[in-house]
Amino acid sequence: MPELPEVETLRRSFLKSGPAHPSLVGLKILRSDLGWRRTLAAPGPRIFARRIHGQTVTDVSRRGKLLLFRLSGAVLISHLRMSGGWVLHRQSTPRPDYCRLSLQLNSGWRLSFRDPRKFGRIWLLDDAGELLGRLGPEPLAPAFTADLFRRRLAARRRRLKPLLLDQSFLAGLGNIYVDEALHRARLHPLTLSHQLDRPAGVALWRGIRQVLREAIRYRGTSFDGVYTGGRYLERLRVYRRTGCACATCQARIQRILVAQRGTHICPHCQPAPALRPGEPPAQDLRRPAER
DNA sequence: CACGAGACCTGTTCGC
DNA sequence: TGCGAACAGGTCTCGT
Image (cartoon, rainbow, N blue to C red; front, side):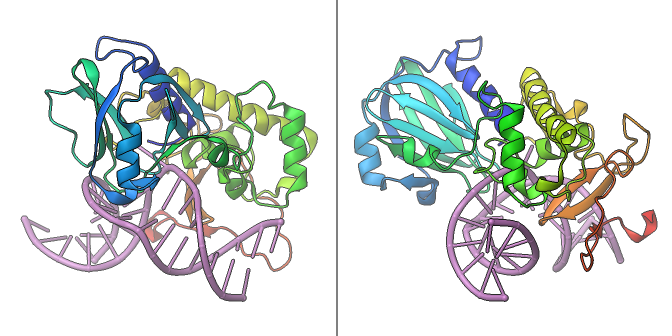
């Protein structure tokens, strides 16, 4: 469930109390149960269990795709990767399937980390700085201006798609929202970052921020049951819409492969950049019958 | 510095 | 219907 809008939605749901569950803030951790050793990145299981016991949640924050539970004497950080998710449920109800870590809280609640693919990672640290320090700017922060973004683009010579997926360049985008932002900016994913002119750089900056804000408003994108409750799937313009008509020009959305990732584009709105000599074109992944 | 391949995992969908 | 291949929201490490 893991891009910025989904993590932000989760953060907000844990901060405020609703019909389904109370706010996490103020709840105390009574014990922990680890279901899969490698889910815990640091510290080791014994130190983790001892240290987290008795801690109270004071805040829930986010940086990029990382979700941070601020505790009275430490910070619990999670990265959901491909299939991770947190569930706050009553102590009396069974733990979710694929539960990798479960925290028993007071007042009869339990916070469980489920993760079918076991890619997710959790840290319990004194200081979040070492993890957060490697991340690029926060795309929705006021400090992330169009000028700053254009300078960062110009400083690199990379194709836009893998560059935008690089969390040290910009924190929070994943495969869905990179494709959506590039489509909004009418830019092909193979365009080189230093070749964007000023209007194109600004359009990309705007596309990124618009799609993230809109996705948060719709509580993120849900499909395949990995992350539930989001309503943004039906508003996506290219992601997972191979063969559908582009909302802007009616051309058929194509799926190509860029940096080993399935990538969705409108071939009319997002024309391929001029090839340099010897550079292979993006691979055409359509099945023979579709060509 | 930039890129591709492989690894880490399991569940679901696709193609024949 | 059944079976293996391909594919999935992410990131790390290694070799070129």
